[in-house]
Image (cartoon, rainbow, N blue to C red; front, side):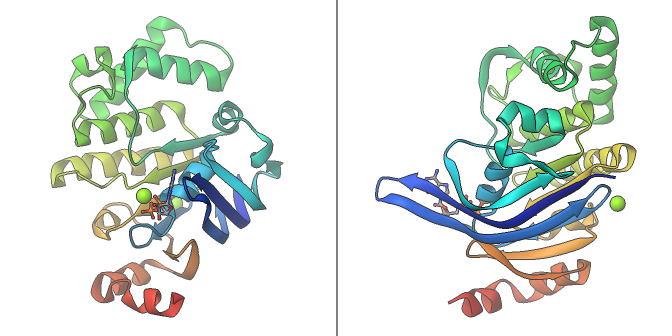
Length: 252
Ligand code: ADP
Ligand code: MG
Ligand code: MG
């Protein structure tokens, strides 16, 4: 079993008006096989938490620690984090012109495993994973995220997760912009990887809709750069009914 621990994390970002504090003491522990949902209003710092875990250079950790099985994640480069088993599906994935999906995935897998997968078996693996996500086989030859629809971007993220079998996956608003059919396919993909690889999931979302498909063990309410409440799935139902107002008032 693996554990991802976030302890008293403070993060700031450099802006034109100087440094801006965003995360203000985040505490969270995730074990293998657990699904944690983080819910919060726009601008509360959810994506900042995801970027900080991934090691995005713009987000400066000023205090606190992140450990993966006792190893100090903050001392790892972006690549080392991926090799250690951390995976981030971004809210706004970047386009990579001139690199096909198939090559991109093979490079990622090579970086993580330390050796390139054999081409024949790899092509088969990608094909099967794409079939599971009901993706057109031609998709493998397209440039990464270039001209992808919202739904295609999200499926591509889950395809990566399926092929890289991370220890922990951070999914940042994987539900946004998906129609109901795409949401179902993407959710099934997340659930399958979760079950097969015992991946711990950190599901960041603005809406409760995806939680009808991916059942969280824990729900955290995130306001103003930190967790303000934790509970089980019933907390998501309460948020659906009451909104974030109560928490926003309390944060003032
Ligand atoms: P969420 O994902 O919860 O909507 P974000 O983490 O994207 O929130 O943003 C939290 C706050 O930090 C917002 O006020 C946002 O404008 C600000 N912020 C995030 N990243 C940057 C950045 N690179 N430059 C300037 N401000 C940023
Ligand atoms: Mg589970
Ligand atoms: Mg966000």
